[in-house]
Image (cartoon, rainbow, N blue to C red; front, side):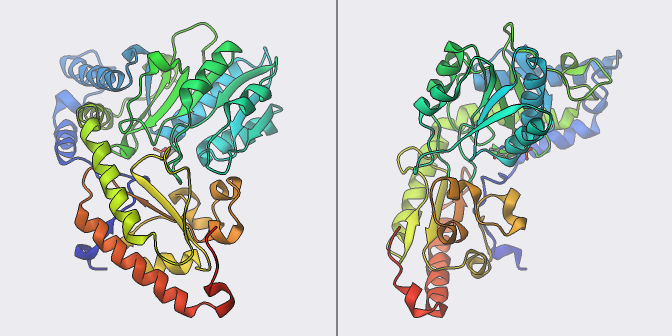
Amino acid sequence: MNRRHLVYLDYAATTPVDSEIAAAMADCLQSPYGFANPSSNHVAGRQSAELVERARAQVGALLNAEPRDLAFTSGATESNNLAIFGAARHRAHRGKHLITMTTEHKSVIECFEALQREGFDVTWLDPDKSGKLDPQLLEAAIRDDTQLVSVMHINNETGVIQDIASIAAICHRRDVLYHCDAAQSAGKLPLDIAALGIDLLSLTGHKFYGPQGAGALFVADRPGCQLEPLLFGGSQERRRRPGTHAVHQILGLGLAAELALSRLAADLPHCRRLRERLWLGIRDLPGLCRNGDEKETFAGILNVSTAGVDGESLMLALEPLCVARGSACNAQSGESSFVLRAMGRSDALAQSAIRFSFGRETTNDDIDVAIERFRWAVNHLGKLRPPETATATRA
Ligand SMILES: *Cc1c(COP(=O)(O)O)cnc(C)c1O
């Protein structure tokens, strides 16, 4: 494939690494002051330990969190596993009821499924048609033996933003821990952990211009918020996540956090303008509908379905546009999006969904190519479809 023609609109799957961050990571790998084991007691080790602590302060600043309450991990999948298994098992003697949503990321859903097999009782909440959780539904689901609630901030497929302040407040009133998978929002939306009162929060560097394989878990410093570790064998990260630090990865994550903090105010309106341009360019297509509450979705994601069009054929016809069907994680399974079905979309509409996602480095030209390509693909596939579905109405 000719690389020059690629238009990358899959920022929700992974963002490009900022070039200065990539250079700093390469330097770190090549200098003993960077690559030395931070647990070593020589001068190089002490220096690389300092790099790790600087990164911790940078991530702390992004979240308004105490740096010491952050544990570095390999990404949000690991952070989610550590938070959910760790908290559920630590509090199992108090009760075994847990609550989450059907529209969470697989790295949350599959933890709860595994805990169910271990004997935990899980309540799965559905969103409304717009993708949002009704706080009253959560309130009603909490029982005396509930220990943990996990609800994500921005949904990775639709961009729907949950009201995490209300969710955290409800959890606190009932003495339940609240975990938030913020993989899509950290570095993109303002997040003030202290003000929100979140107990556990997961993030990952490669969703905000840092490297893949570097993430963090915030663990609030308060009684009752403790974790059973998943890994054993060292005292790193206060025994929550033992193992030699990946210094260059952590450095990249810290720099990405620092950059995000300074770019947040410019990135969001940039995304908003791009999304408006894209939506105005395609919205008149026959059978097209938008997935997710229009006002309360993250500006860097536009998810649309097209009645009567097959999603897989559409993906092929869109090449070399890099977009997603649902999320990257279920792309291989060929199933229609479980997130969209949970929002009440028909199987056919969920099946045709395409997620455009973009960010800091996306240009108007990229969006214009996407509009042209998408219009061509939908019209082209529309001509091939049988006449009875060609007139499918808007959902
Ligand atoms: C990307 C993502 C994850 C997983 O992050 P990794 O860094 O790949 O482990 C988890 N949750 C959400 C919502 C995501 O978007």
